[in-house]
Image 1 (tube, helix red, strand yellow):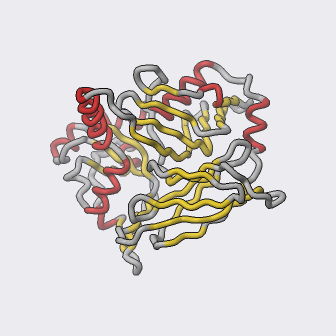
Image 2 (cartoon, one colour; image 1 turned 180 degrees about the vertical axis):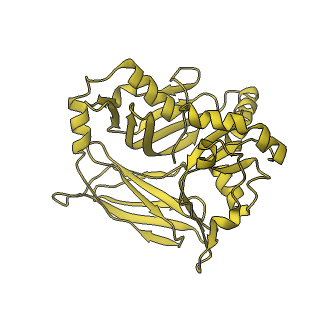
Image 3 (tube, helix red, strand yellow; image 1 turned 45 degrees about the vertical axis):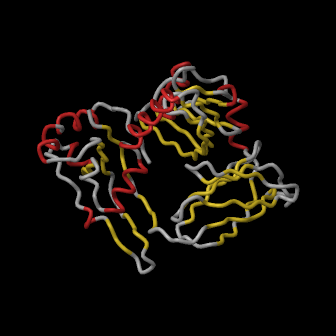
Length: 311
């Protein structure tokens, strides 16, 4: 069965040769005092640093394209900042706001059910936490609040710490927001992970992790963006389909890259998608026969509230 999710838009840049460094200062938004020991990470990488006694920091960006930097500290709202123009040096100063929303959720956190907890972890991890699969080391730090409109909101004051026993990664996930509306069955969430590799105990474990990592990469957003950059999404096993055509039970037809790709004067590649599309991952080159044979499966996913990740 193909894997699919909704794509709204992506913005990314061509690669440059220069190394990128970000420096700045972290302060309190109210009184301007420096905040020490704030976490500064480059999202989706293993790059991490902390602010010093004066609130200053410096971090090197792995890779040479666009990136997202995240600043996190207990008791404050995490700051997420996307940098789309690569250059050798970036200055990013942050005045962190107190996390009032989290305090409200924490104070009312008794109003939730077991199904709310299970739904949250299934959306974030893709499965229930377990010691042999996706193990969550600090689940007690996550707070749940179900309001009178049957909307679930979830908050966490610190990065969620996860051990992925499938692929051998230690992950910290900074959750900015999570909301699930039970009336429409729609979930929206946003956050940023950073990670480090776990040292395998033996060659068998290392080979097993490598196999699982390749399987995960085959259907990942990272692989899709790289395929999009090379303009080879069909060859790499991806298919973009108009969501409305599926809702109307029309036969799906591929979205041509020439209709959504635009190169700017700075050699940046802009992907402009004005309406929801389904990104279908086949894990192998896509043929016309595969598209037609999978039509009924795609239509069922759209019309039976199959869990779809919005990005």
